[in-house]
Length: 334
Image (cartoon, rainbow, N blue to C red):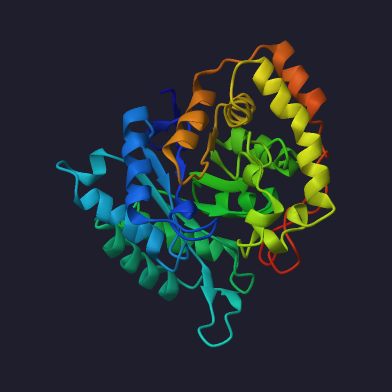
């Protein structure tokens, strides 16, 4: 397994990680044993980075990872580099989301995350969404305190604009920025890929296979009807869904001609966009994980990269990547 550095001051990790949102019921029912099988297969494939969050299944994802680590017969820190996130909250009565980047909230949630995972410190801790009532410089200061105290080894931000990253960097080094990035979502190329590369910050790419659009088996309307998030997501609502699946068919055909799965080709393309980019695809099956890992072994030629860009040019996807409610606290930029 090829490796990449998790920020210029961080450890070398596998070229792809495991996005552990799939260990909750976000994309359908997830069984703990199935999640453990994915983690076991990840280790066998040489994948040693996990990305989770305190809100994935209201702590379930972290708990599942912790239970897997507790069953291993070696130091947990030797198995995976673990990242988690904080900042998204949900009102218990109304179910409405809100965002909290206060130091007291971050510290409280970090203690709970460490307990669920069964570790003494986190390798990487993200602010999951910005709380606009608190300056990002102040939040960066809080995270740096946690680094100094040894509770986390590094920190980052998710879904922020390049301008916000610059403000945070004025306080101290930001190890990673997490953003959706794939052949179907290329807005990071409008400043974020350039700034992270120049500053030695890792760009951790979530949803690198377009929430299934860039796989050999994109979600059907029937399957989406059981997924609360996707059935409200513009790209997966008709007529956009049919249009996107039809356009992406040419990409699936190209992958077949190149003798690689569509998932693997999507990962290979993304890894070629910069040495600081680390995709974190999620999956509930070992077979799909193996297809994703296939992309780390594929070196694409310039001709093949040009073919991919011709097949799925920038802006091909129909529909916004988030609905209005889903885009709250996601920083827009151009």
